[in-house]
Length: 335
Image (cartoon, rainbow, N blue to C red; front, top):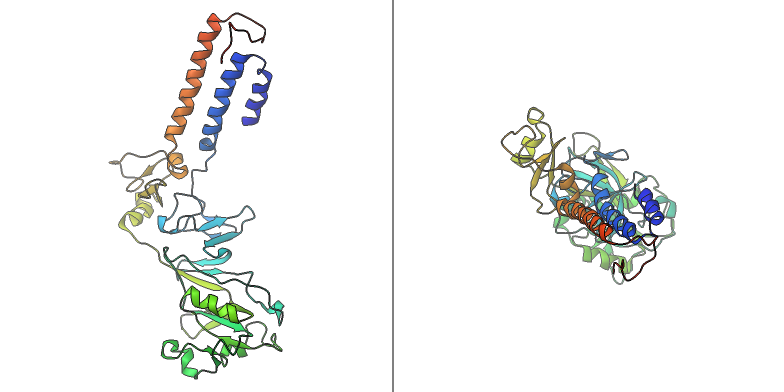
């Protein structure tokens, strides 16, 4: 549409009146076109990963607590934004709320004794995300003069809060690296769980690299677990009466979302957005496209007014100005 208007604009650009009118129309369409092309529905998946409440990959979908955290690439790759960078999401579980991330900068089995530069992983403390206690961090080739590296009693693996903050050289995971037990031939390994990001940064100053291992649940028992590489991030699911009513199939089966300007709750329905639930006849709805994209009514109105004003001005000038075959003179000068 815009390309067609551009071609027409240049065809008529030799005549100043047509140039003015088509300029107004073109600028108006540039504002209006994004509104018409907005996808009115919340996407429910990115690649093979389901996107359910409280998350959303379209602005206005899900809970505002997790706004702008997830990014879905055109390739179908889902990424999580954190202060330390963007991390590919491997999986999201909603029954046991957590996200599994991969960090390409962390050590892996293919590296063996070759340690690449890495960076400390961190989370935004203002959002409802937290590092899971099921994570364990393994550090490699730490300086003995700067880091306390010593074996800990076996009960420390079960009750780490009752032990000191030394890096455990007798860790089970150091002796049984997942997927590659014999990958380290000349390097040392110790396990340490940093309670804050600054502790992790300090460790990396005195260690060659590190990696994160989480315990994936296989069954109902807490002992039925397997160690895998990755970062487990836990999240909360905000449960509200409004959201439960919105999702109720008998009440319309809407999608929980929010106004992108005020972040107040909205129930996103097929034809409109409401503040209660889709089949509630007592409430007035909002334009669905307008809410998902943001408040754009004013921009649309401005575009329409601009087109109307341009047409009125064209008619007025055309009635008075002489025909000059596109040559600008003092009699028909516009500016």
